[in-house]
Image (tube, rainbow, N blue to C red; front, side, top):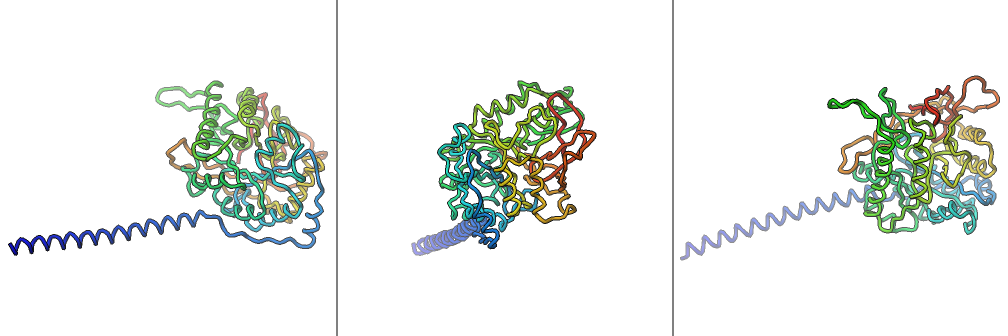
Length: 433
C-alpha cells in the first residue's frame, strides 16, 4: 500500500513538474511572440514629425501667394524618406513643402470635394483649394507624412494597389494600416489598379509597353503559335483587373467608395498603342466607373499624340504635378504660379533651374521606384521597372528644326529629345529606359 501511494505521489510530482515546465516554456514563447509583434508594429508606426521652418524671404513669398478660382492644382507624391529615386522626397523637404502650403493658406480637399469639382464645378470650394495625392500605398510615405498632415489638418488621398498589400509587405501598407487610415479624417484610401504587370510584351520582337495601352502578345508555347490577344480579351483583362481591385478594397477597407483611380504608368494608349480602339475604351470605361480619373504630370506631353488630352486639366483626366527631390520650395512655388497663370507648358521646365543643380547632376539614371516581382498569394505583383533616363535642359521651341521632338516622355522632371518613328495611327512608340 505504502509503495503504491509513494509511486502515485512520485508520478503526481513528475506531472506537476512537467506542467510547470511546459507552462514556463509557453510563457517564454508567448513573451517572444508578443515582443516580436510589438517590434513589428513599432517598425510600421508613424515616425516623429520633422520640424521645418521657412526663412523670412520664403515666409513672405508664400504668405503673399495669390488667391485663385476655377482651378484646383493636384500634387502627386510617391516615396517620402524612402530609397533614393527620382520620385523620392526627403522628410525634410516634405515638411518644408507642407509648411509652405499652410503659410500660403492652401486648403487641402477631400477626394469627395475634388470629385464634386470635377463633375459640378468650382462653386462651394474653399479658397486656394489643392489636392494632395500619394501613389502606390507606400508604407514609407504614410509613416513619414501621417503625423505632420494630421497636425496641419490636411487631407490626402492614397491610391493603393491591393495585390501589393500581401505581395510586398515591406513596401506596401498592410490591410490593418489601411483600415486605420480610412477611419481618420486625414486619409482617403482609393484604387490605383488591382494587380498585374505595369508593362507587358506587345509584339513578337519582345517590345514592352504599358499594360493598359497595348493588347498583350503571347509567345509560342506547347505547340501553340505566338499570338496577340483580341480586343475583346483586352477589354476583359482591363475590366477584371479594376473590378478585382475594387472588390478587395470594399472587402478590407470599411466605408470604401470608388471616388477615383490612377491609370498605371499614366498611359492609356496616348503615347502609343497597337489598337486605336484602346484609348477611347480605357477613358470611357474608367469615366463610367470612377468620378475622378488621374493621369500623370501635364508636363508629360509629346508631339503628334492623337489621343493626348491637352492642357493642365480636363474633367475626363486630372493631370497632376509629380513631386520629386528637385521640387525645392522655389521650384514648387514656380510651378504653382505657372499653373495659376496658364504659362505655356513647355516654359514650365524653366522652373527646374531654381533647384540649383548642374546639368551633369540632372542627367542621371534613376533607381527603380516600384517593388521587385515576388511570389504572391493573390494576382501576380508588378514587375521591377527599368531605370529611366532624365535630362535637365531648357528647350527653345523656335530653335528646333528637322525631325519631330518629344518633350517630356515620362512623368517627372525631365526633357527628352529624340526623333520619333510612327508605328500606328494611334501615336508614337513610347520610349523606355
